[in-house]
Length: 253
Ligand SMILES: N[C@@H](CCC(=O)N[C@@H](CS)C(=O)NCC(=O)O)C(=O)O
Image (cartoon, rainbow, N blue to C red; front, side, top):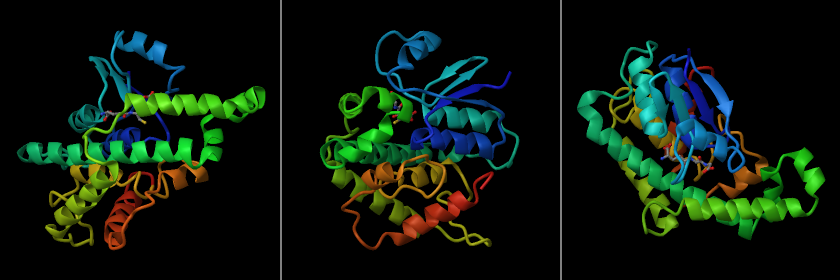
């Protein structure tokens, strides 16, 4: 039985693992998670009665995996496509470091984006409620969506006490430095560990809430604008060009 991936179509945490699973050619069944309303069933599935629940979750024959990093490692162990490992053993510490950088940037970007939706771009709240439900709820739909966003803001406080804008600046500088230290391959790609690895996946995804990618994340135009970092300084275009070239070489692109 192929494992089941519970994921969110608009979330870079989910997209990281779809990329890793697809790259390694792992067969899986994809199921959409519904935040809040889907939580009790997920707790039952995971037998986890307390503490926060997040997706992606991969239900495997030997039990559930509840963190994107662990799911990507599962993909690497079980996939047979593209023989080069996504997690070369000699780079374990470096991969962890890149993943932590990405986690910090995504948490900061999510915090800024969600705040923008509830404070400045309230029309985007409509995109958080499916149209048929919105028709039933009328003007209450925005209030309910806003309550959900406040809950998410409280659940996912930024990973570090650092100001979220500073976290995003630090992430861009760290990625820029790491890319400067790479050499382009014959095909013109730059890979953080010399060859394509999970370092590239997690760092490329870390840019999602600074300037969302054109594909792979299902975001409405309003959400796309809310998750675009308003203070993005000039001079980082090469990072987004690197990310876009990687996305263009993803399986199925
Ligand atoms: N460290 C976790 C973080 C995952 C995460 O933050 N997931 C969010 C994505 S927005 C989520 O599940 N949101 C829905 C919810 O909390 O109900 C991982 O890498 O898997």
